Length: 241
Ligand code: FPP
Image (cartoon, rainbow, N blue to C red; front, side, top):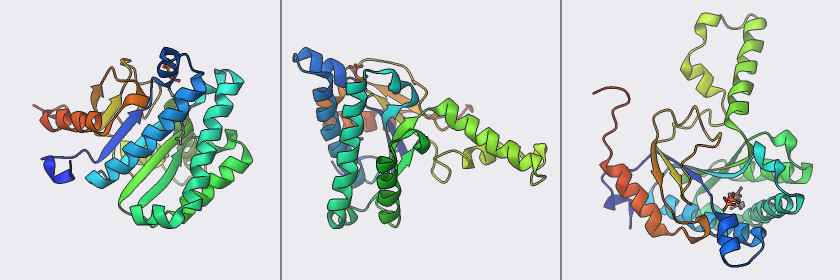
C-alpha cells in the first residue's frame, strides 16, 4: 500500500501494543519473549506508517501503572526500550534517512537516569526530521499528564501571568506532552480488549476506535491497512450532524 491508496489518512494514530503476554503464553514462552516480538512489530509498523505518509503516531510502551508488574518483566521492557534507543543512535544516519523524529511522552523523572539521558539525546538528534513524528509513551499516564498541565496553569495564575478566564481547551492541550501535535484521529487496540487504559484521554476526545483480536506480536502491515480502511469509511461528525 501507499498513502495514495487511501482517500483520507488520519493525521495522528495511537496504538496500544497489547497482547504480548498472551502471545508468549500460547507458545509456552516467558512474557518477556512476547515483548521482544512486540518490539519488532513496533519497529515494522512505525516505519510502515511513515512510508504511508502518516505524520504522527504514538505507541503505548509502558504506563505509570505497569510498574506493578513483576520486576523481571519491567526490566525486560526497559531493556528493550534501551536497546531501541541505542540502536537509534548507532544507526543515526539510517534513521535520519527514514526521516523519523522520535519523541517520548511520559514522566521522565521516574525513569533510570541513563535511559532518560538517552531519551533526551535521541530527541535532540532527530528533532529536525519531518517525515513522521513517532512518539513512544513511557511511564505515561493520561490523568497524570492532565494533572501536570493543570498544575502548571495554576502556577501561572498564581504568578499573575494568566486570568482564570483565559484557561481554554487549547491552552490545556498546549501544556500536554503532545503540546504541538494534532489530536488523535484513530486509536488502534489489538488483542481483543476494548479499553482506553489511561492513554491520551484528552487527545482522543473525537478519535475513532479500531479494535482487533490479533495479538500485537502478530499484528501486520495488513492489519494496519485494515484499520486505515475502516477509518476512511467513518463519518466523523465532531458532535455535529
Ligand atoms: C502490553 O501487553 C504490552 C506492554 C505493557 C509492553 C509493550 C512494550 C513493548 C512492545 C516493548 C517496548 C519497546 C520499544 C522498543 C518501544 P501485555 O503484556 O499486557 O499483554 P497481555 O495482555 O497479553 O498480558
